[in-house]
Image 1: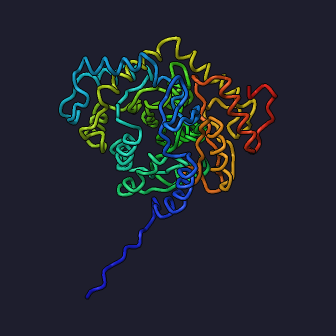
Image 2 (image 1 turned 90 degrees about the vertical axis):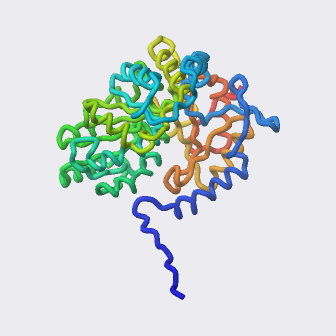
Image 3 (image 1 turned 135 degrees about the horizontal axis):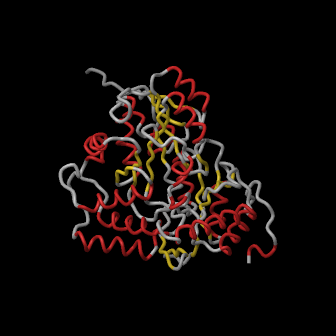
Length: 417
């Protein structure tokens, strides 16, 4: 009998053995300590489990709490009534109802870009990045694809597909010297990076713009964590600060987080209608029968209107106030920036226990560990929101100090009251 072959994986662009082998142990510990798989109902801003435990959620990306705004909820319902269908299940390249076009026009005016919608930022990246790699979205030249080491898994997951079209490398986090060296060696380079990342930081957009001007670098940003929470009318960090807003800059962002709805926006500048048709026809799931459903479109249209009112800057100001309040009591690497995420450093050995004690005290913060962060850099991720109260934030800070959060400062006596 012929011996059957055993496959040895090349692990050039991903390694599930490592990710699951190390990360699953932390997830199991999280679940065993009641920090994962929680089921709870929201009532007046507080979550309630079936067992009677009450807690305030400090691990939620709805930074402006628009996902529960009455106008956003009503927008979803009104759209369903108006168009009479939840999910028009056919590729939009063949037949589409007006809802998507209305939304893209509204978002285009809001963000100052040509907008193509998608059901999620992850779906957008999975579809767009291989088209960039093949040169069909861009200058026509196949670029070297440089993925930032810390870029979100929704982008990093496209590495194998991109590698079938061009060369793919991974660069250290925000390594501008490496990036410039690649620009000197290759006719075209695309850098894939978070504009605002899930661990509390922004991309060096000004320095990247210098490389764009000098070498024609294409930068692909995911700005999901700053849309709505940052910038005039909530246009986000990238469109507020990037000096280069033309065909050399592509930005995707979810509409699920601070925007308070569902779906995603692809923001383009200087791309022709022909290029947009290529996206609609060939960008993976964007070309399938999976457009944003009608309820998501209606909710997004309603949120976009809120972004055009004075309510948005008021919510942003409240969020900034809460961030500053947290920074007063707990120092992190993110202290002093406008980002709504703070990572309170812990060790791999203490992060689960610390998270459990915080949860028992009535607050939920997510323990982050490998592969969410690099090995040895575990922490408790805190997400601030406009809808939280100062009392809740002070209470959380008091507990973080009590559990021995590194670099936490002492709270005044009244902080926990």
